[in-house]
Each structure stands twice: as structure tokens, then as C-alpha cells.
Length: 622
Image (tube, rainbow, N blue to C red):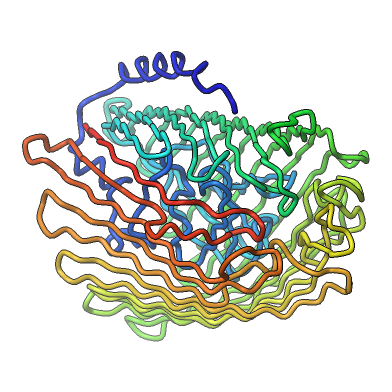
């Protein structure tokens, strides 16, 4: 077990220094409203809870209850969480910050490694279909799209503890001021430090995390510019973490550095442009057996990218949507057996738009264009994108939307799938093809003052999808394999507000037909690990001013797997109770529980599920 005590003094020193940066300013309600206490109705949030129970908050916290997202966690979501959208796998999902999509060229397991305080980012929009084909990058199923928020003066300090020797601390603070005499420009500075440690909800499921990040912002009447730097280090263990079902007590140690520049500008009546550039370095020290640490896998990836995205309106009726990203990466690895250790990528997408007014309240929008993907290591691809949508603005403030879309997207496999060798724990295939996906979708959304309802039906054809599979003839390894899969999906999402109670519910259905073209494939770790039926129900209740209850529930019936131990059904509940003492308006006292029913469902077949976690603590906001 990693010696976490060695860092205790340093952590306390950093917390002490950061505390000196605190500043009074905004009210607790102002600070809370921007991040920690949003509502389902007002901000369109899709989960009741945004704060985790087992560690400090991260951008992926509680995504497992998001209706369109399937988060398959090892240890916990903030330790290692594979995020899939609409029945895709983790490597088909993109994480977009501003105009640029972050890339994990090694495996895709580390897409969600974002060393960014959640206050700095908006809650993610889930891009699918035509929107993903336009704005996504090297992601065929969907993209989580995060925007950079405006900095506010104020901050918060959180201290928490729980069973399994959990303790966590977190400090966040922001300052703003006027720039010049005009009053049109302002500056902002924001910083955050968090740490967390525990023994874990199962034996050898310990963790030790910390994160430090800061940004500087310039805000003008039509622009926002952000300079960001972040660092996160995580150690965590879990039985059969990645190499199930081989019975190892594995650990992973990650160090992630991210430097990013983002500028967003609006101009004209309805035109915007956004530019993002970043460099990301991720070090990964994975140990197959913590009791025999000589068998280790050491990787370091570096990714550099620049992206431009926007919409230029030529008139009230016509516009051009565009997106471009250029990325270069390289990997230094102890396991790659060939000279395929660097790659460059290019994507260009153009989507012309035409709007036809039908009357004062209704209009039709038609978009049709192309995306072009290329790489110096792979074949290029041209992908058509088209959709037709009807919009209506209602006199009561509500709106209606119906749409039909067809879109194609493509991506290339990661280094572990193509260059890890044909033997060992992770058997790769250097001949894996570029993955392509076609998606047709029909859907709509109704919004009213106190309720909303949206529905979608889609059919997706994935050709040469890269999956990791298991064979009874080769029980010492999991193998990278191409598979053709057709997926039928149905999504229903509804929200409603009754006075002091807000609720959101969803139902999802998925059905897949697969063809591996290989009779030796006996089980799938990822592509066939999906919920056939899934129901979520979240609620926020404020019966009195000093009390708030937040609850998220998920029930699923997972596709059967020969590798999964235990039930193929699961029921998870995340519950949080907050008390706001009237004597100290800035103080919140909370108790929370994750996995209330102690369901041991295996998110990833063969990898043990998490146990229940209880925690309590206090947050002081200023």
C-alpha cells in the first residue's frame, strides 16, 4: 500500500497557503447557485446530486445517473470511470473543453482524467448524432461538451470524513475586478486544491488523490478568455482492476498535467467563434499485482492540440457551422512492441444551415454538410451530416422541437489496441481498421413552465468497432478485436416541478446485433456490456429553508455476460441530506451515502463492484 502519510504535512501546508487566498464577496446563494446547488428545472441538470460521497468533486461525479450516459466505474467514478454513451464503449466517447476534445491515445480509459475544478466548467451537454459528428473528435458514439464558466468572487472550504477511514478536504476561491475605467471589461483569478484518501469499500480498494489547478480570465462585453493550468495525482487499488478475470490485486498511479488556453467571441447578431489550444501529459504506472510490483506497465503520453469552432450567420436565414481540430501525440511505453508511438490527426467539419420561418412562432431548420478525418497512420474518411428540425416558441414561454437526423463519424484505435503485442495480458492487433459509425435518429423535446419531456429513437451501425474480448481457448489474455454492431435505442426523459419538489425520470432501451467474424470470441468486456433496460429517478426536495434532500436512483437490467459474477440486475441509490443552520447562513452540514443498498453489481464483467460508502462533513461558503 502506498505510504500516504508521507504527504500529509505537504497537503496541510498547501491548504494553509490556499486559505490565505480566501476573499469575502458573493453570498452563499450566489456561490452555491453556480455549482454545488443547481436545480433540475432551472439549469437543466440531469441528476439531483453533483457532489460525490467517496472523494472530492470532479467533472465526472454522478454521471452514472445521467440518462444518456453509462459510467462503468472501477473503485469509484473519480478513480477510474469508463464513460459510454448510447451503448458505445469508453473509447467512442469524447470529452470536449471549449472547442477542443481531449485525447487519451493509450487506451481511452483516461479520457475522464480532467484536473479541473467543477466550478470552472458548466455541466456537460451530451452531444449525439449530428451534433457529435460536427463537434466531436475521434469519438463515434457521443461527446461530453463542457464550457468554461465566468469566474465569481467568493469561495468555499469543505471538510469531510466517512467510514473506511475516508477523509477529504477541499478549498476553492475566486476573485474578480474591473479592468480599466469603461466598466465593460473585468478580470478574474480562480484557484482550487483538493485531497482525499480512504481504505476503500472493498479490501485493497484504497485511494489517495490530490488536485491543484488555477486559471486567469479576461471578460469583455462580447468575449471571454481563459488561461488554465491543472495538476492531479491519483493512486488507487482494486481487485482485478483492468485484468479480470485473472485474480490480481492491481494498482494504478496517475499523474496528469493540463495547460489550456481558450477564447470565445460573439459578433454580429448570432455569430460566435471559439479557439482552444492545450497540451496534456499523463503518466501511468500500472502494477498487475501489488504484492509482486516487479510486473509493472509504465506509460507516458503527451498530446498537443489546437481547435477552432463556431457559427457564422450570413443572414437571419443562413449560417455556416464549422469545427476543426489538429492534434499530435506520442507515447513512451514499456509494453509497446513496434515503432508506432506517435500520430497526428486532423478533423475538418462544415455544416451549412438554412432557416425557413413558417410564421411568427415556428420555423424549419435544415443542415447538411461533411466531416473529413485524417491521420498520418491511418486511412482518411469523409462523413456526411444532415438533419431537419422544426421549432416552435410558445406564448407561455415554452418551446417545442422535433428533428430527424443522419450522421456518420469515424475514429482510429488507441496504442494499446494496436501496438501492445500479440501475447501477454492485453493482446493487440496491428491490423485493426479505422472505426466508422452511421446513426439515424428521430426525436423531439417539449418544454413548459413546470415540466419537460424529450424522446429519441435511434439506430446506429458501427463497423470495425474495437472491442476487448475473452476466449476460452486463451484464458491468459484479453484481446483487441474488430466487431460490427447494430444498435437500436430508445430514450425517454421527463422532468417536473411540484412546489418545493423537483424530479427527473428516464427510461432507456438498447438492443444489439453483433458480428465478430471470429468463432473463438466467447465474451466481451465492453461492447456487449450494456443495459438492455435502464431507469433513473432523481429528486430534490426543500421542505423548509434550512433542509434539502437530494436523491438519485438507477435500476438496470444488464446484457448477460459469462464473465460477470452475480446478478445482471442492479439498483443504486445516492442520497444526500443538507442542513443550513440559520445562525450561520454560509454554512452547510451534510450527510451522504452512495450505493445505499450495498449492491455488488459488477459494472465491468469480472471486476468486483463497489460497496456502500457513508460520509459527513461541512462546507463554508463566502
